Image (cartoon, rainbow, N blue to C red; front, top):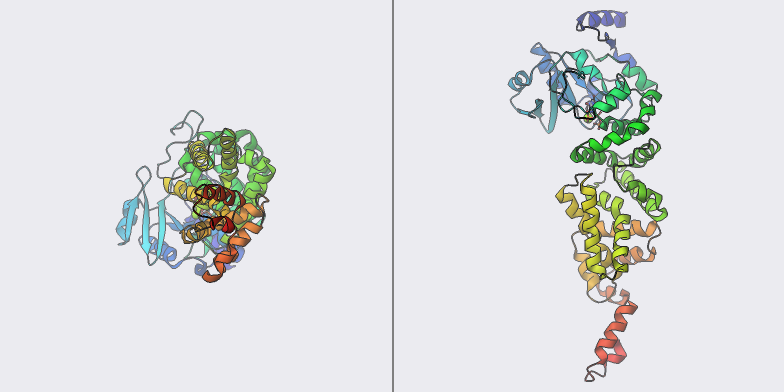
Length: 448
Ligand code: ATP
Ligand code: MG
């Protein structure tokens, strides 16, 4: 009874739109999202906007995540109010973005991103690059248009905290319940407008446990190369999201199945085809996923250091084979691998610095004699370096005995460390040769 009444009331209240679908108004009994699931700040932003006569809904990933029982990362609000109107209603808020203005509303520790409904893109009036990628997308529109320009049906759900209903233009709730990731509109057109949607399909499918609808899945293989025209900074952001999602293994398996790993990390496919490199990369991704699940911090530097390590190893070996000394050869190899990647992935300078620190520590773990081990323990990045070393050993690149030794050495009482040192044979031989020369130190020979 009440449900029917609600549906009638909300259907009448829905905007009259030309040729766009009428939305379904879905009551809480069918989707289970309650006001308490929404953050206090998002609830407040919606109610303030609504009281001022605007439409305002929690939208996008948050609604979707709550329905599948996951905790949303953040809450976005979509509204009929213009950015200036939003700004005027909240003291702690600021307008950001040049091309398309959105408003950040601060409330307690939270920041809510509030966007005005945006219009759809149509091929004629929209500026695109020569491959059809949309360059500008900055016209305000109706709520129905805002829903239609979103990527997947499960991402176009508008939750009204006041009535606890979901306004659903594209059967997103049903798709979510049937575990399907379905594109709004023609997938080929949507991928052409924005090739990153192919990556989002793989990532969201893995994250939410949804299977990609065959219509959205089929064109990915043939359209994957469009990713090459996406600006590196955007690609890097999306890759980071994917790799740090806690589902990296699942995501990359999905990407590989869809033929999407080519051109992303240009050498990822090569790496994944080297037996040792492949083992190492998967181990590192499993390790990252596990850390995310345990709520431990993960660093992009560590992650990219692992993804690119076997490239460095190959380059380093090639340089040593040409007679370059080990240490400078390693540094040259690091630079050349990072240079090659930077065209595709805008690895920021800070992250590149972190990556290099981890790599540069590696040869130092092989020296277990003299003062070197003590100095290595003092390094601020010792722990990251050791984690990296252990992954190398787990993948079969080094004997497990090496990270085990370092763990024991680090844990040992300072007084018992001395006895643990392992003079390396080559180094000891060199020392002996050097010390033999001055005949004035007879007692040395016995100690060497
Ligand atoms: P998550 O936050 O879990 O990474 P999300 O779907 O919330 O996933 P956001 O990047 O936060 O991803 O985007 C918020 C919303 O904006 C999405 O739910 C979707 O409705 C819309 N959106 C994001 N990227 C695109 C895109 N490339 N094309 C169309 N709509 C998009
Ligand atoms: Mg989001």
